[in-house]
Length: 354
Image (cartoon, rainbow, N blue to C red; front, top):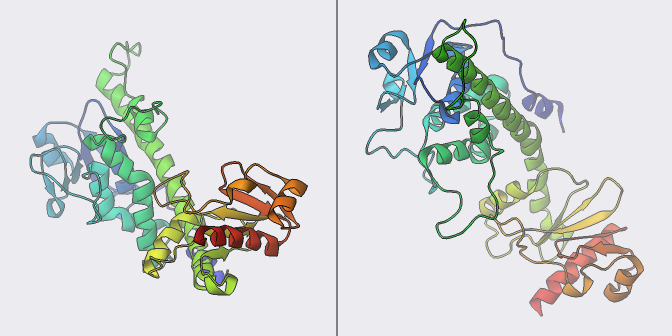
């Protein structure tokens, strides 16, 4: 990777000593992740860097004290710096891609200011990559906060979930609220002030998650995109079918890039079936590509007769000398030599066509 690319993916450090004089307004009382995340995002911008927060449901207080208001007030008006989502008839979405959820307060803030936040931390990022990162962060983090806050069920109606997950950001923020029966033993601070302190913790918690996801997307996902696209464009050099691609090393995130790049390069009738890469131990892996949106459904699995077989037994039934293993689920296998890993994928393709 060139030096200029390395600079593009290097995060800038913002000045923590700067504090804007502008005030961010939001509602008082029980808080959720959407307004906590919204406050964090705004505080990353020069206009609201480390701004103080006023929490109130009194519209006059908000109108006179706050420069920007989120998640309260019954108005969404970007020109007035008002970002509520609770009003009748509201139906704002992140984009026109058929999203399942309306935007909550954090979603509105992110839609209007998210790219500016990214630019603060990655000023050398190209406009194209900035847009890719902006959408990926929404998909990986922000959309879930919107859906939870606006009441979109994760599981379709009529399907009983096998377990409940309370480890997500929204749940962790929710647990920072004082319990219904909690007694404030601190006689030096009021219950309202105590809740404001807890809200500050919620903002910090949201910030940790946002920074973690942003760093992963920009500094890991984006640099990988170039290599996935190069492999895709060379697919016919790799194999005549054009349905097998290879990377020099594993570990980089390739799956989401592959789905997107297949659409961009119009591979509708010749989707990639297998990806080859070398693991840390030097073995060449052959991995099936899953159906987009599915975690365990492969476009094409390795042959059934190979699954769960290893070493000499596998070499014997497959006819591939250095074949090492195939997982019992058929989604991944390995060989000592690249040529043999390629042959494993090639045989799977041939069997599909027969």
